[in-house]
Figure 1: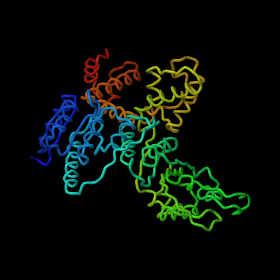
Figure 2: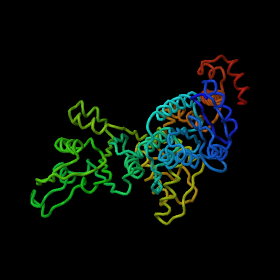
Figure 3: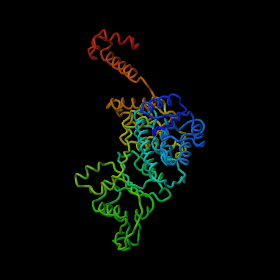
Figure 4: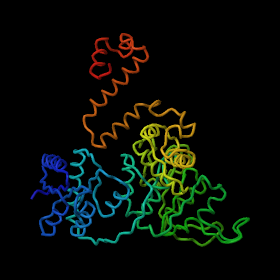
Length: 470
C-alpha cells in the first residue's frame, strides 16, 4: 500500500471531489467518505488505517471532533487534519486538545492542504518508528471565552492557543492597546494543564518603580518603611499557575534583572529576605511596544527579551479584522444590556456598514465602550448612525483615508465566504463608482468626464450602456 494513504471525510460532495483529485495528482492514495460514521465503522472492523485523515468538523451523525476523539483512542499516532468553515476559539482549541495535527479553515488553498498532508505523512512515518507512548484521555471542562472572530488574523490566534494548550512554555503577546492581549493570556491559561491553578495579572505600567520588586516578589516584615508585616508577591500567588505581566516594556531595569534570574532558576528572595523561595510559574508577557527597538536603545535587556520571546502571538488590531466588527459589537451590546438591565440594541444595515469602516484606534476596548454608551444613550432599539457619539459621526472612515485597505478587507472576506469570480464583480462596481463621481463632478458633461477618467468619449458612452447607468 502507498505510504501516503489518505482518508477524506466530508458530507459536501464537491469538497470530496476536489481533494480526491488534488491528492491523487500528488501521488497519494485516497478513499473518501460522506460521513464520519462510515469511516469509524471501517476502523472498528479492523480495516488497515490510513496514514492521514482529513475530516470536516460539521457533518450529519458523528461530527469531526467526535471522529477525532474516537480515532485517537484507537490509533493515537494517526494524524488528523480538521477542516471547518465555522472557526471559533473553542472548537479550534478542542481540536488541538483532542490531538488534531492541523486545523484548516474553509475555503482552503488546495496546495496548502497537499503540503500539510505530506508533512502529516512524514510525521506518521516517524512516529511508527518510535516506541509506543502512554496517552491520557482526561479533559478539563471548558468555560466560554470572549475571544471572538472569524477573520483570518484571529484564526491564527486561535490556532496558536490550541497548539500551546498542553505546554507551559513562555509566551509573549504583542499588540496595540485595546486588542485583547489579556483575553489571549486568560485563554492560554484556561486551555492549559494549569487551568485549575491561579491566573495572576500585573500591569507593569501601573506600578510605581520603587514598589515593583515588592509587588513581584513580596517583602519581609521590616524590609522597608511601612512594611509592617510579611507579604507574598505575585510570583508566590501564581505558584503552579500563570503570571501575566502586562506592558512588560515598562518594567524598570533593576526588576528586569531579577525577573531574568527567576526565569533562569525558578527561585527568588522576597525584598529583605534571606531564604530562597522556589516557584513553578508560567510567564505570559504582553506589550504594545516593539521590544526589539527597546533592546537597541538599551532600555530593555536583550537576554530577558530572548527569554520572553520563545513563542510570540500577535493580537491583531481591529482594522485588520473588520469583518468581525458587527459580530463583536452585537456581543458587547447583548452583554451591556444584561449588565444594565436594558433591552439589547440591534443594528440597521447602514449602521453596520458605517461602524465597519470606522478607524477604531482604541480597538476592541473602544468598541466595547461604545456598546455601553449606545445601550444607555440611544433612544430607539434600532441603532442609526446618528445614535453614535458626535465625535464618531464626524470621524473619517478608513474607506475615506485608506480605500485600498478597505478593498483588501472586502476581498479577503469574500474569499473566506467562498465567493468566486471576484474580478468581474469588483471591476463592475469600481467602474460604476468612478463614472458616477466623474459625471457628478462635470454636471453630466460626458466629454469632460471621459477626460477625467482617462477614456475617450465613446468608451465612456459604451461603459454607461453596459453598466446600465443611463
